[in-house]
Image (cartoon, one colour):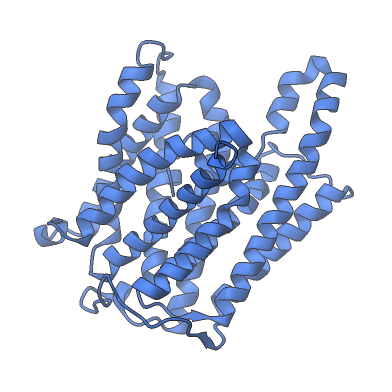
Length: 367
């Protein structure tokens, strides 16, 4: 049983993420504004994380300089607030299964941005370099198919609609998905992932000046809650839209703010400690499978051939990049031992961006 424990934990992690997509989509289906949803989610996450951060790290934390605070503020704006808002908009335009599918692009997008910022070396003539290129191409192909091709529906189950039917009284977000709306939604989801990947890349630099992870995470959530509140007030000022009540809206924000931010944080830290970040990243497609199954069964979503094919290509691209990073990690110890004077430089260049499919590798603020 002890040997199988990481497998059970990583399956639970993916189930938690599947629940995040399902609850978020269900809240949007009943008319919740995605900007208000982001504010409540980040506010609850802040309230949940702050006591742990203050109790565990406050005494030993380095002083927070103005420069570090400003960097965290900017990164929170782009990497959390705008990323989550874009993700929420994209989710309302598409489906829970599409939200789960596009997360498989995150390691590929992160790698590509890391190359641009000089944090990752891409040797195209090596086997790992070719694998990375194939991964990028597969990822682009999968995203294109998801956006442009639906294909025939695959009706495996009767639609239960446990969380209710979508409403049509809250503007364009809740209209029946047209082809143009669907394409727009897919690219908005990818834009949200791009902001999130940029956040992960830049954290590698920010965490050098402020390495207290829990305080960093709590402060980021706090700043993001302020930013998202300003955006939400600018978009929606009707008091009735801010009311949660004992319904799916409250359940969704509480789940994302506490279960995803709190429970999944600890579980991911455990898996990375026991089996490493690549093991965790390899299980990411399981979240897509769980989300797809539950969205059909509970939300009444229609799964089409195009979405299945696009998802397969995205998963293939993910595994190509992970395999390439695994090959480079096997070579890295020998390289580091032979070039001892440049050890710090090598550590920066060889940041394992397969870790970044799981935000806990740098700091955990879930997508």
